[in-house]
Length: 279
Length: 311
Image (tube, rainbow over all chains, first blue to last red; front, side, top):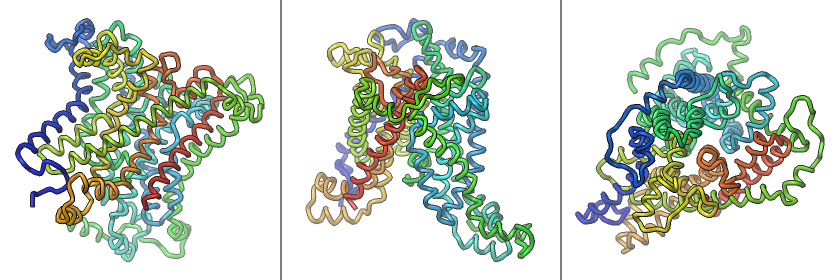
């Protein structure tokens, strides 16, 4: 036997070296744009414009300073955080009971309906919403943006949590029922504490997705509630003046996402596939 | 686990009181109370827009509050199909972009999953690094790619020169803009297909491979005859997921090209966006949305039949 049977290069020294070379190459390709993003954000605008691209230069923090000193950055960061946590909170309030209901009592049609939510392009909500939000005065308000992003968080949280609730042993819940606990009490006191690990990764995923969201705030947010991705996008207009700012702003908006990815890791794929794959 | 079991033994504070008030009635129908908030919410934000869009697609409306929508019946649909060049272009761009990137991502993703399906040093780190393109903020990534593709000082222009390729204008040239966007998309999403497939591969039973090897199957044969058929449902599921998202692609294209040069990279999604929020043709945009919805449905049915054909 030669150990692992699933691939070529079965543990031989040459095969192993070739494998690590291939692995390095693959990872380099996928990581390179991130490296380049961070790398260039330490260059001056003129240095970024150099051709061939400069690899040796004196790093500067001016780009970050310029971006962070922009008067609206604080406001937009706060907007992003408020909208992300707002739609997370309400999404949890709606999604958790729904996930539990689906996991314990069936309701498969609802599960399907929630999946359809994910299928529909954001733009198809946006036209009717825009009209209705305008009529109701919800444009450029936190309420409007939280409602919009709940279309992302509610299906996401529901689908991830269905899987976790299904793993809660029914015997525990039955025992609590016999002890006189109501069904709602079983959900709150037995099931919820047991799915805490799943809860954390669902929450982080929801935060990543709302943090990254661009299309909804682009249309539904105004001067007051604009989020960071919209601000980063607006840096594009300075393309020919301040590429350093473009790179620094991109780095800054991506940094929290990278940190959150490090926190969830495996559950990330499970979340992206809405619980379809237990990676 | 043991400590948690002990915790659940605590006597709950409010035992159900049989026969008094609404409590028991609520408790008996509790399953509906669990799902009702989500159902109502999704009904409001999902069903309503769908119906509203369907209705609005029968009107012509600039979105101005002063002028009410004007009834045109199926006029918008007639315009869509009677040869709106923008629509025909958008369908072509969408099919080209989605079809080619999906094909490459699935092939590459399955190949890489096969490569990584083994024990090796730093597997966890590799997995985390591969998630980054999928999770990164699309607007930021698109800005970076946009500059990497810059014909005069982008790093890709330099790479092309090193590889002695003819000078490329990437996103600035109508002939290369879609392939360039496809490369961006492949970079961003191949890891997702790969990680999903990898999860499927790990769950395959090892004894089949042992049996195959004893019977003298080459690694290549076991890949085609055993791995691929077994992992196919997972791959098709991943492809369906990717298809749904690929048709929805907005941020990346909007930020890096805005549909240009001209309309060379204007997908259906971007075309609808322009019609609605650039030209304020809300009625026409609504009829395009209905068409877009059916395009997505049709694509999913095709992919779903691939999966059933297997089972």
